[in-house]
Image 1 (cartoon, rainbow, N blue to C red):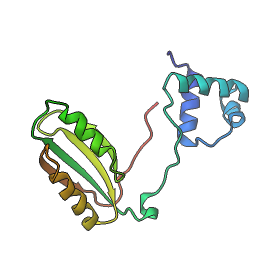
Image 2: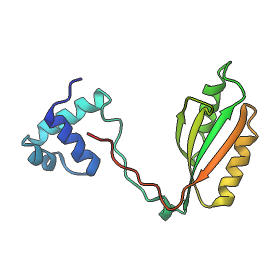
Image 3: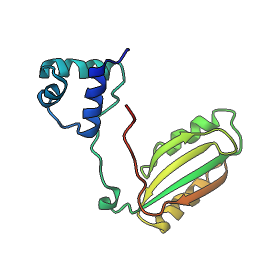
Image 4: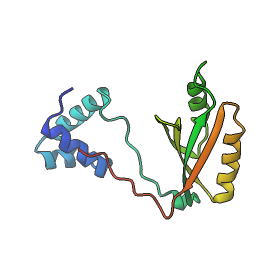
Length: 150
């Protein structure tokens, strides 16, 4: 799908505020609300837009600590990486999981209540049969997340 200048402006607007009405977005891109609605539907169908989400402050939910954790597996055959990723996907406090290259296999982002909470999950990771090494890095303050550049 080739993105037009109007598509890019719609995407910028949705990233900034996904609750704006199609009519309000249409005013900013000189299109009707129905044209914007149609275009958003096409962007969703093409999987350019993969979802609309509310940004939630983890601190307000008691998740005051962010920890990035590197994980190395003992082996990679027999679906070990897929199995690991599948298990991690069930852990609600792991909010990001990325497969990496190099000496580490995965980078995980944990949102936890405190260091003790992370220690529990860290020990749970170490107890997994395919895990060989784990290294956590506690974030000082809150990480800054920026929108996807358009």
